[in-house]
Length: 151
View: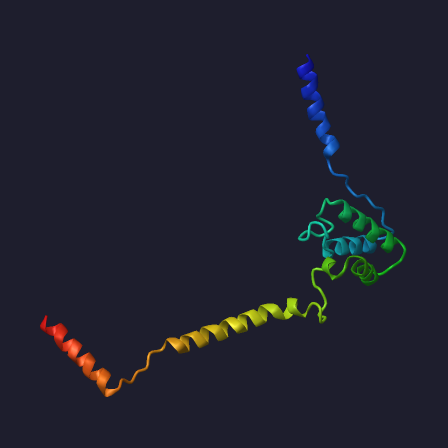
């Protein structure tokens, strides 16, 4: 009997672990679309590759709530993004701005390709044998070929 009760408790307690679903009331459909767009375009600082809309982390939940509150207070999506960048840094945007501190992120891949191409070209030039031989080398080659034919 105790075993059956234990199994029932285990099955029923699974619903306690279910994630809370954010339910917010918006004043207009446009505001709801802005909220959805913002939460999908902001990166979760903990998950790093998920948007705050997709993340179940506590910080993502707090960020979603803050986005909702800022939109309810009449701020524009740009103002909300500026707030999030000021609070969490440029990391929260999927497209960091071009600045001296982020220049390596933007120029790095192109520089890597250019440097790689230069290395390939320089190494291929070094491997080319000289086409011309001096007279002594030509005589040695002819002698080796002549000895090879006799054998």
